[in-house]
Amino acid sequence: GGVYTVEGDLEVDHYDVYILKFGYITLLEDVFVMYGVNDVDFYMEFAPSGVVSGTVTELGTGTPLDATVKFYRSDTMELYAETTTDPVTGDYSQSLPYFNYTMNVRAYHHIPATLGITVDGPAATFDFQLDETLANILLINDEDAKRELVKYDKSGSVIDIDTGGDKVRSASEIETDLIDLGYDVTVETSAASDPLTWMGYDFIISSSGDDTSPVEDSGYRTDLEAYVAGGGKLLIEGGELAYDAVSYPGYPTFALNVLHANDWEHDSSGTSITVYDASHPVTTFPNTLGSINVSYVGYGDQDSYIPEPDADVVMGWSDYSTLASVLVYDDTPDPSSGQIVFYSFNYVAAEAVGRKELLENTVVYLITPES
Image 1 (cartoon, rainbow, N blue to C red):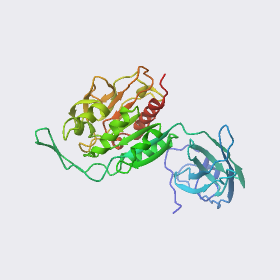
Image 2: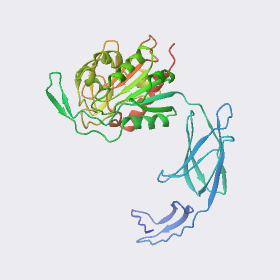
Image 3: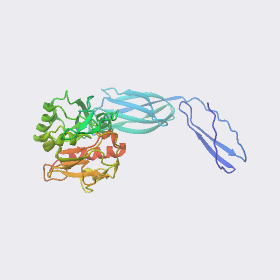
Image 4: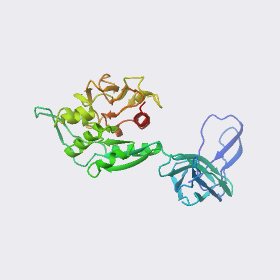
């Protein structure tokens, strides 16, 4: 413990040595390096603590917010301390050892704020003004524990075997990404969600992930059909949705009215999701998308298919560039916004940065007002 070795072709000269260790005062020393082996010991002092305080209010109104304030160590990004504001005054206070931290401040219905800080004195003040959230989203988790173990074609012949799929559910990753982007998210299961409340949100997300028996509940499918028929906006995600709806077991009206999928083509469709329409809002705003790497573990991860004539392919597949991985159905002439976006892949299987940028573009597209 505490032993270090620095190897390299260092010239004979003076060097500034910077040593950072949590719980100790940061050390900066001048060291003269000579020819041969240099043996230099460094002695660090325990770090004192300073008090970080401030106020969290709403941007524009100055209303004090009931917020959560978290402090992460800058070297490991581990959560070190957490506190809450006084809901009446918006004030917070936290004692921290001298060090560098990343602060994260969150309040319900407000966009979170992140700030890098250095605690190197007895007191420091950081005030935050949080803007109201851009959208209220209902995320419906339709990824249950039941799995179809064998995949059949329309004639009943076995065409694939379920390999077990990912252990992480897409809904949890979508929720995390949406919160990081500043949106307010309510999560419900498909079995417990009340469709009478759906129109109270800006839009809903139905997440099936790599579930090999997605939307198998007929009542849930009927509710989704009624929701979009009534003008509700929807993002629907899942790597086996197109096959089950179009081919087997077959949900014709759901395929037509919700997925806008005409004919299923393939499971494993490539190592990446590729841009098909480079001018569409979903691929260009606010992020300019490129190819997004995506893995394939089992047939619940990917579907490529032919859309209905009333829908548009905006992203395809590296092996089948004209077949949909991301489809858009726009029920109005205004191209800046649409009604339905369909991800025919398991969200968890896509690389983190690319899928989050696609998700942000999709949310902006769905909530943009129609002219």
